[in-house]
Length: 400
Image (cartoon, rainbow, N blue to C red; front, side, top):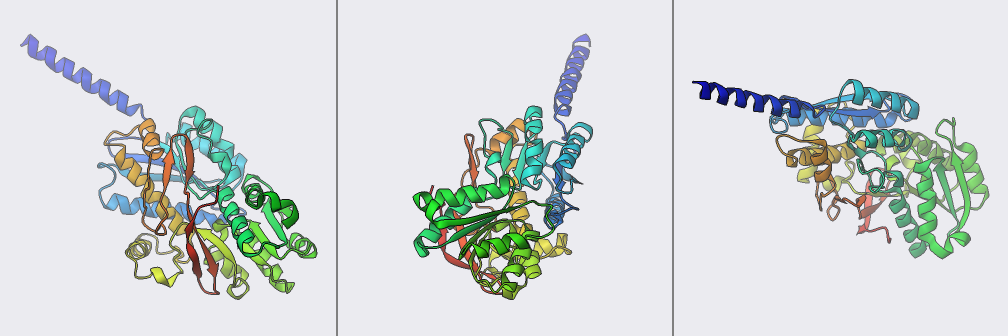
């Protein structure tokens, strides 16, 4: 009898120790995984807030299918109005008060950069940062931060390569947001043009995200004789620029940042007929492209939108990017096992190899290495025909 009591006491002690160890992992309970995110539900970039609703909708789908090893996913997304100081406040709340397991899908370069060091110091995974800026591709300094989008620098290098091959005497202008996001486009264009950059780039114009319009910058670019315009701009400024270019009767070849290339709202707000001929890059199957409309990936995505996010815009590419990111996160969480830790999730994410998430363009996959967070290494050029994006050639690399 004493031996039996000793065995039971030992068993209870072991169980308590394991439970305590498990409970020490923030955001993980026997029934749920709590995930945090900051989104611009208000402010100058509120068009991108739709991603937050898409994440919640995808989590609902996963939960209906049984969750992750029996746990439900719960999203806590707070509005930061695309303002870095607010991002800091909301992120601290999510980590220190709410105890989220990880941060996921937060929007914006400046916003995420404002909390990057904090999250790394806390060893909280900052996964699928919705930015392609180089500041999130520094695994040697900030290993807990993993970007989720195509590199802006790689994208703009590809545009420069395309310009050199097709219009070697172009007069190139760059319109860019005056922050790390926009400056990556300026750097990428010049790097891609190489020795020809000094000759070909004839004008550079920046804007602040709080500027009411970019009309004066467009007028200046036209006056400089630009015939090929690369735009590292957000949705609102892109729509303004396209309208002003049309109003001036100016007809430059435009290369547009993929994050602002959604038919709706960006091009629709500008005027679809004013957007014909614009080029951009993508890694996803564009929902406006009719060639995908019988594709199994598209049909599954559309069924998800109708059931779980009926208010969502099926023309908005942000809802596809969110779908890809969510699918990848779920894949990583499942691979991390029934008792996930932050360290194991980070390991699984940063060793992901050639993952063909649904809705990625054929020939494009997602890969990370512990010392290289590039993610996407190939992209598809496409041209707008007035109603939809049409592919140009086959997926290519950035020439790096």
